[in-house]
Image (cartoon, rainbow over all chains, first blue to last red; front, side):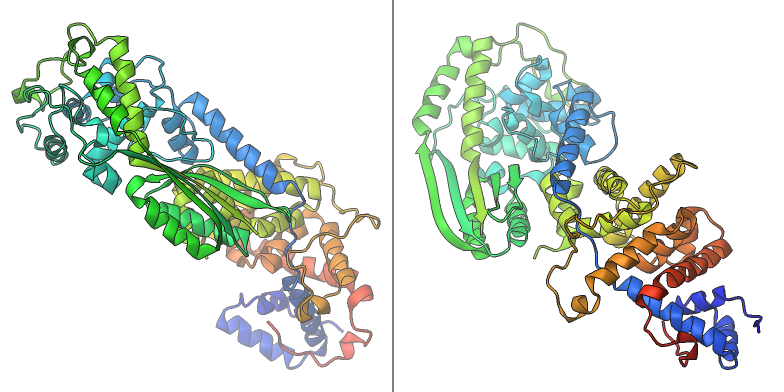
Length: 378
Length: 200
């Protein structure tokens, strides 16, 4: 005997894909048809079995292969420039791209130039346009990110911080509060830090007509009020779950304004994870304290190196006329600051001056950003 | 435990490490989906990789309108179906040759809880084999419905099939599976004599 029910209604019934009317009709039919009741029972049994199937772990090597592809993709995007997919890779492409003049393709050109003048050297360099030099960080916008591959071997983060300083959400406490932040206080160019920061704030508020200190304030070599310390640390933690601890660590790093420079993670039994991190110097202790919450401490080393003397020496040399970075700077007409990029004229400063300044900026970078290696293992 | 949203945010900023941590939570499901859609391990490996890479690249466009896992499974499904369409009539290796000497597959939950115990290994393998033996036209809607939990409408959208076709293919796929599995797995008693109960 055959019944008239479209049997696929039974599957739809199991799947709750029927309207109320259809459902009522199926139930009415089931009440009278044992064959359909049996088929429904079979379908229900099968569906239960299918739903209970466990997930299948991918084979060994899956994660490693994926990581290789992610990084390869990122590399490819990095060398192609930011014309690729609008994804994180594109962000990274912008991060790693050769220092093509960002100021030519960045929208608020005038504002950027003003900030550049206000904060002195690093940005003055930007105005001439760095050659294919080490200053890749120039291309870094406010979206600056660090990833596994974004090695921080690229010096010149200070210019990136110059940009960051113009966007308040990026300004970390150490950058905004340090008298040496963002390359301010460069001999002969920037005036004191307070002036510089105030100017940047004005710029950010669109208050670009504010008289600027850039070339009107007499050179005042900064006098460190406290020792300038370069801090670096290493912490080894024993954790119960590597994956959980790893993600916790990532979050704590982010919460403290830090960045992962490089990370590795192995999954075998003897596995462990390592994170090379940079964190605003004044957040290092806070990060260390919170990290100890995710595992038991095996070891902790923090080193501090006083670089005050080195900085003073560099400042001293930079204050020599032959090392002036002011040479060739345009005269700053504050009345036209809201206009176009100032026209460059004169002779750019000497290479030696740039090198000195780069050294100084690197030191300041190290003072402002502590490095920390986090090691997690079971 | 870090909230998934935080990992997503970090990954959206391009942090490969955060994305890896995110993937850690989802890769078994992605791989299982790819394996069951394609029916063989080599394709599943490639397509799961492809899907995760694509997810990484399109992550900035993820706005949280659906859950992350739904979003990820849609990407995986699309990657698999696109590839299968590209191959056109060239059949995928329909039947997974389960080499008896090969080590058992690693299931996501290795600890044999009472439920895992209940579904014996042989039973699981029989079911996986039966799914893999379905032809693509039946396997895909069935996997999307019974293993992924997509609605008929979502399946219609993902596969480009009319809703009515989705419905009948799911049903016919189930009948094929039932017929294949019944001799092996059905309770010994005669099902037709059993009082039909409502389920689902």
